[in-house]
Amino acid sequence: MANYSEGYNSSYSYQDEESLKSSGFLSQVFGYASIALLITTVIAVGLGLLFSYTIFKTESETALTAFFTLLIVSSIGALITGFVIHLVSFRNRSIIIPGLLYSVFMGVLLSSFVIYVPFYILGMAFGITTLSFALMFAIAKMTKRSFNGLGVCGIALLFGSLLIGIVFGILALFIGNGSLQLEWMWYWIYFGINIISLLGIIFITMWDIAHIVRISERGQGSKNLALYCAYMIYADFIYMLMRLIRILLMIFGNRK
Image 1 (cartoon, rainbow, N blue to C red):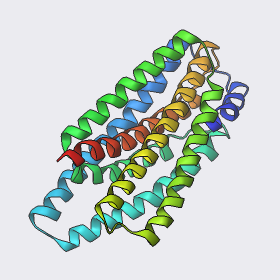
Image 2 (image 1 turned 180 degrees about the vertical axis):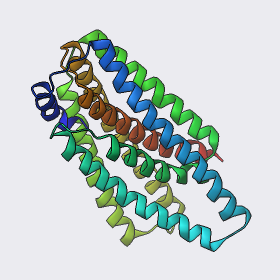
Image 3 (image 1 turned 30 degrees about the vertical axis):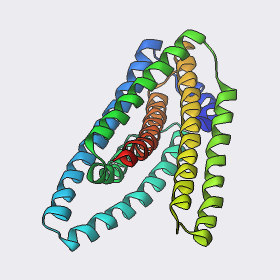
């Protein structure tokens, strides 16, 4: 995310001799990110439909075990490839291979949403996320600001929501939810944590997009940097999408 922005900016600006024009650089960034999102979507939908059929229609315990095993392996794989992407990118090397692997692993993880979440909620979350990115890109182009303070605030919100989640998670183990009042209390606490973390992701995404726009305007964008920026945009999009799905599921799922 944006906490790596300053590092990769200085790293690539002086090592790669080939610079791209602003429009060309942004086209590459969003082009690479779109390819990664397409791969993730195809895998998520494909695996989701496959396991939805085998788990619920055939009631296969083997399929259920295989699916959760695949989720665990993909979670570990996503963590490892994410670390590798940051490590390799700071050495001014291509991140195509780990980037593709990361998009595959995220597709497997998102397949769980395809299985258990109604498609209208998935569509709403995807539409809101896409519109939010378009709006943030327009703001970054028009304002010419770096939004560094917003990014720092976003990181603080993310860590704060994580800390609050841990504290109330421990409390829930001792208190439980034996009454309707307690159930509603935990519901609103969890809802609030999701809102705080979503705001953190939005602020960091705004920071990332602003940095990418500034890099393109300075003519400092290289091909490898375009790949890394695409990874940042892709990761921000996925994180925001997943958080929105949870929030929308809590809102509309509760009404049903």
